[in-house]
Length: 502
Ligand code: ADP
Picture 1 (cartoon, protein in one colour):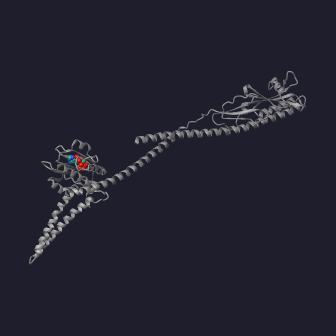
Picture 2 (picture 1 turned 180 degrees about the horizontal axis):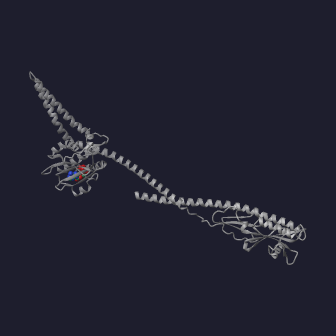
């Protein structure tokens, strides 16, 4: 029961731990995705601005070459140098004279044939773009048109890595890549976390961000340790709460059982009243006969001419004494059958055994048996409900008397009181036939009886009551014949004797 509960808690703990790790990974993942998206948008904006600057440079250079004929090469060269100084991503600026054959480069920064070929394909003053070095550089070509015809072409060579460099650091493990979108080619899109076209009419570029971060990041050791500790604490708490609940239920169940036991015990005592009736009658006969005798004697004294007051006083005293005795007998019986709430108090076992002997003495006499209390004189004290414990001893002694009834030879039942270690022991032994093997195996089973009119509840009840007071009851055959039943209860300190007497 407890094992399966703990196993369930352990499984739940593992599941909780797994969920915590998954939640962490999910959170990190969405956080990283948001970060990447943000970085991508910022870089995209930045590149769009840079690209616009290329247009502006080409337009101003175009105006410059058209300012004079032939083009003012020295001025163009100076302007180009200053542009390159301010914009390191622009690695080359050239002007190609298309009127010459073959076309000639004025600033020697680009391949004139390539520039001429691109310029030849340009429609009007539109820009032409071309990837160089496998996409590492970009060639921009623009024709400087004068009256619809131009014999100069302007070229910018752009370093793609610098064009796509971010001002702010990108998230860890992130790579930015800028590619020229080739006309008519739908290149297969690489798997990327962010991808967007640069908003430029003249330079069709696509920015992609790729990340090498794992899709599902593992939680760091500190998180794992904290999760383990928290899950363990929660599991411990749940375990304790469940335990407390089970204990509360168990206590409630015990309370119900105790209530049932008390009723059963009461029924048992009322039942025993029938058996005790002849004994009671017999016990009451003595004081009543004495009272009657004394009353008659008193009357005789009064009939005399000079009644002796001393004799009369003696008779009244005897009447009073015997009436008290009869009252005591009835009081004891009333206490025995009354249905009082169980009260745990300090009980002197010897005193209790004597009470039982008093209750059963008439029955013992009736069957010619002796019933007595013996022991080592240690007078141990225990904690128990007096009436219920008395019933245990009563049941054992009555069983003993029933066992010796009609036996040839000695008919004796003895209640021995002694101590053993920390325990008090009360043993009821008899000189009966002893326990049959079947009885030995089923002694404390409810409704087990070998007697024609037996109920089989006496010993079962004894066991329940003794257990209630943290004791044990055993029954076996004595070495010298007959049965012996022992009740073992935790002993309380003898300082409690004072309290018991009160
Ligand atoms: P009951 O007395 O109504 O039969 P108990 O629970 O007191 O119920 O006893 C159960 C049975 O145990 C008895 O019927 C009897 O067979 C056996 N037993 C109890 N006490 C003794 C004893 N002192 N000697 C022999 N047998 C006994």
